[in-house]
Image (cartoon, rainbow, N blue to C red; front, side, top):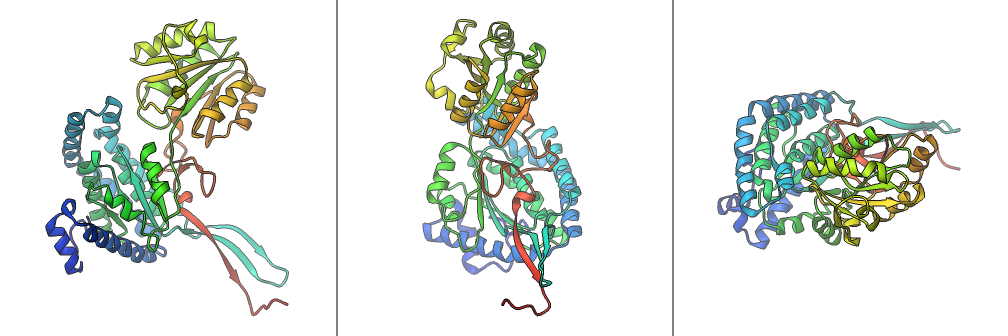
Length: 446
């Protein structure tokens, strides 16, 4: 487990040194609990300092880290290769391996993400609303950091850099716990990040990462309600279910991406084809990829054969309803398919009789993440935008754009499907809360 310097700090307790020498993966329960408690205390102390850290220091740190990510790309890729080798040995799917891989392009994207975050306005201290009371009180609602953010995530190691960057910029201390399949990649990125923070003069323990792959560490983290203000999970259903069940800390959930594209009866054939191919095949192992295609019955005979042929040529397995199978050759879709996030080259297809049936299907079976309509009708588009209850809703575009960077937010913690606090790509503002600041001149209430 790293302190903010990336090595064990000489002020760590004797007990901590004993744990370090013994090794985290061989800890007894009480030792693990003590280690996590120490990390929580350190994060709370760091959050107090981060609250008033200047934008200049935060931005300088982010730019320095971005430069170091590029300089250390070979080291990061070497560590990532260890994870990929272990993943192949475990039989991870190609889609999962794709999520795990860090090539030069993705490391460059991480670095650019940090630079974008550095260039964004600092949300801390923003006045959201202000009001002058008739008695002269000046009442303002001001953005403040959440405090300490615990982030539990799987598979994608770029989350390590994205999450740490957003937490730093928004004045939050963070505790990161990545998945075992990306342990070497996550530690490598965290080492670069933490050393960059130290060089820039950021507070100790602004970013900490849990090194152990022991699942018990997650349970201990979820009990640190005295030190952690919010838990943000990114992962599969089993991880999210466990966190909801065990956490004593408020959770901002980033649930499944069961994303739909609906082709209305007047959908342009070329647009429909291009959008569907992009939404499904451009990167199938991510949460904003299309998992279900809905097609209006009037357009299905014309649109489905060409789209199905192109998807199949891209290696996509198709599963369709009975009406779909009358038009194209594919496997039969089951009830389970409509509620499955494949994260792979698999697509379920359903023919619907109307726009309203499409909307009902999306709201009933979707995960309220990202859904799209392809149509030339303004009325149909507006009805879909108004009625579909999802965090992001599209007209004539691929759901693959649901991303903090694409939305101009810099990096992102994830895509929140919550309705409280924040929804959609969770970036800087999503990592803040509000407080009222009241300035007076001796007023008393009558």
